[in-house]
Image (cartoon, rainbow, N blue to C red; front, side, top):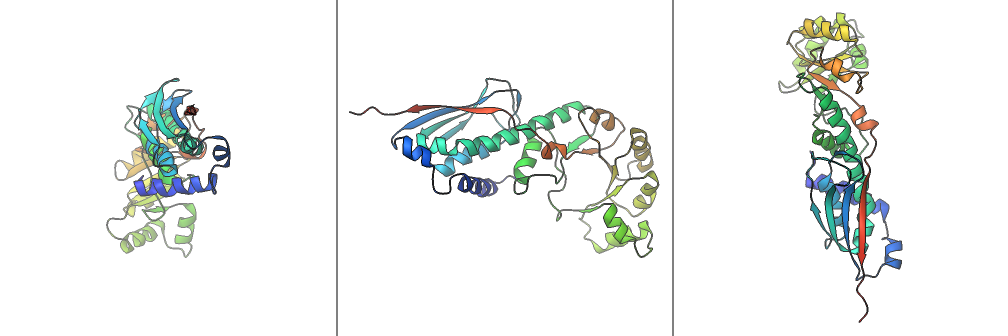
Length: 288
């Protein structure tokens, strides 16, 4: 989903926001002939994400600026590691610096947090996935970062799958129609390729939902004992997703109940940007 077109569109918007009429400071203080070299350096350990986005910030500011990526998305790094090198006209390097850093710091923060969750459940058979709790306009960037960290993506948008939650179910059954019958009617109206997921918050909802032939059942805010019982009841007849109260302290125990998927909005909505720095060296030609 992170296509070159998407990258350029979002980065151009960010550059226009940051320098709508150019970089007044650099234009006033830096000679047009000056060049710069810069290194993207890690200040703390983490997992890299957003290399193509970082490169685009400089390329779209000044095509004469070149970026050499030394780390690939998904690579782990330590403090002091150089992740990319930048060279070109100094004004372009300085103008693009903040936008390039903003994107790759946030994306690397997401990748790093996701990697911690993925490491915590390694060997259980469960996968960690994101949610739609992303920054508006940056979903493709943030979800790419989740994958860079070893996680997986949930549905990308409301257009991708049917996901019936408690409010949907309340409306669907408001006329007295039984839950199984109502969901089966939904299935009959949809193309056979459409995935249907239903959220339940009680064990007694599982059998009526299963009887409608849904593809995934989300067990929302279940206790560990109820998660285990839910997995037993579903018995492979649908994908089992756990959601709610997912933290680094709880995720391993949730995975060990036997669920297939664990979704966490924290991967994108409460992440801390990673500390990366751009060490810049200016080169000004001496007057002849």
